[in-house]
Image 1 (tube, one colour):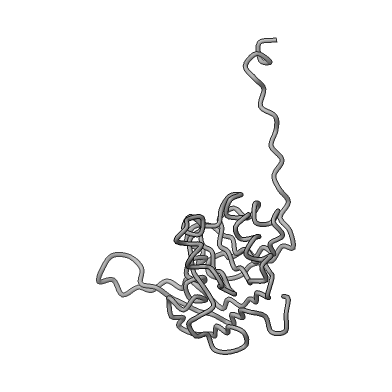
Image 2 (image 1 turned 90 degrees about the vertical axis):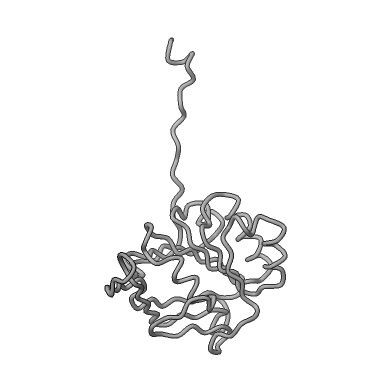
Length: 179
């Protein structure tokens, strides 16, 4: 993590949500003791399967959802509004999204799959902002220099300094197959 104390610090975050049909009292733990930090000028990608808790983590970090336990600290203090923006990657690509994110020191970017999201996240990072992004497929963000954290069943399972890009095989042209 860059910077003294970092821009964002999440400590032992826990969150459960109602599960099943309306009226059901069952609860599922979506975040189970998640701790991480993001420094100024750093790009961190949280990846995992659908339902792993990526969006809930970003919403709690943004102050848009309340955690059941744990702490979110923004610049060393209890998180308060201002200076941070939660957006889906498709929103950031729009004029409205860029206007909302202008001047943000912490960008919480959801659904950041693909090269366009990686370029946008890298541009924000290069401005000195801290970027915490969630993606199912972290390869584009890893290629942009992201530190990749894996979230599985609400827990950070492991961290990767880099995720190696997948090499694609050359697909034979139809005329090649006839030779």
